[in-house]
Image 1 (cartoon, rainbow, N blue to C red):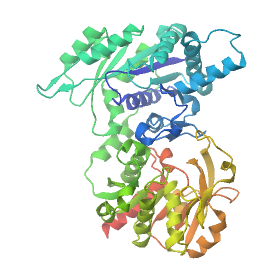
Image 2 (image 1 turned 120 degrees about the vertical axis):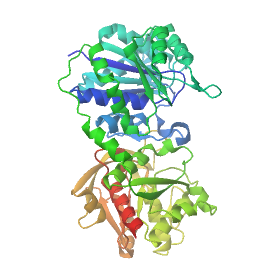
Image 3 (image 1 turned 90 degrees about the vertical axis):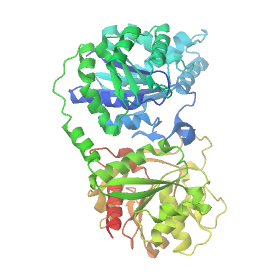
Image 4 (image 1 turned 90 degrees about the horizontal axis):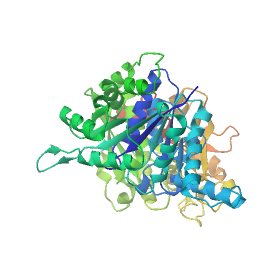
Length: 536
């Protein structure tokens, strides 16, 4: 079987929707019966986004095998409904680290190490790994950044070489670009797209398909102009106006003939007709007028909502399942400490406290957890959100005034959250946490067990600190229930308050496994409880 490749590049500006377009295209191909895999190439020199600030990079998306990856992998998994592994994302940092390690071992027999061929060969090796490990018929490869960035040049050169090695008939280059509108004249411009295609062609790559993104509908005459000046078939210029519903993107691409075009150009034959009815139904449900529930999301990075991309989508999935719309009130936890933002908390039907690192804004998160507990407001805590719930409970329900996490106060008398034993000798920050998929056994008769309706689950983790078992008995006597435990019973995975409509928190990140058609049970439980509170 010959592997076929789709290479997605970006033009004019970043954040143009390349990841969503690649993910939606993957769905169209899967619907035609092809086995699809996806890979993101990130040109930054960090080894992975795990040590990067969410303000810099948005959310870190964790895979089953513990790989800390780009948030676009969340789009791939949610749209195509596949489970990816660490071969699906690599960075310039990983490539150079591998080549330098080989040079230090003497693998190159004293040769001079250069970008071409050594760096480009390593990039090609990693691209080839995806097909090898997954057995995919079609591999979609997205190059991060924008054509013209100095960082992405080795990646584009490697893909140019790969096209010649696997055969032009087995590759397709799709260029996603932006058509800006001049405010003074209201005129949409194609010139930046022409320039980005010129830059791409200057390194030896001519795009086969151009996806022209814009905020307004794109005129046919503009598509003709792009086709003429960029030397692309007219039918291969795809006008893509911004969709008001994210999950409509696959439907729009299907209407524009992208699925059939890609299959034809790759010389493939679909084994079945695409069934887009579930997606049509999903989009119709989103658009249907319905009552709304308000959820206050109390975070540390709320200025950049991409830092909570999967949390936001999981809330939307759960709202749809409950027949409501979710209104997210973004609350900066540090503001609560200054007596700001409480109007959003007090008007909310539910409170969600997501993950995060560092001591800034922690007391605000603890205050939000206290408000939820004392006022019986439905609450869902994720990772750090579980830890602050436990700290708050210890301080205000168990009278352990000094209780804290040793992450924030090393000298605390009551470290109810403490560093895991196997983490204590680690000094490196990157890739050293408890990462990836771990099993969790649910305790019968609890809210968590009722939500999941199965005896055990596997969930994705990303943390260093755990609930301190020295306090477990005291917490249970005080009214906290540890409803999810590791198979050996040693690690607390889910905690909940017994005397509360829905105050549930997990040490893991359930948002990573929520899907549009299969919302995550813990999020469904939150929205259901919030809906009931809203009715009252």
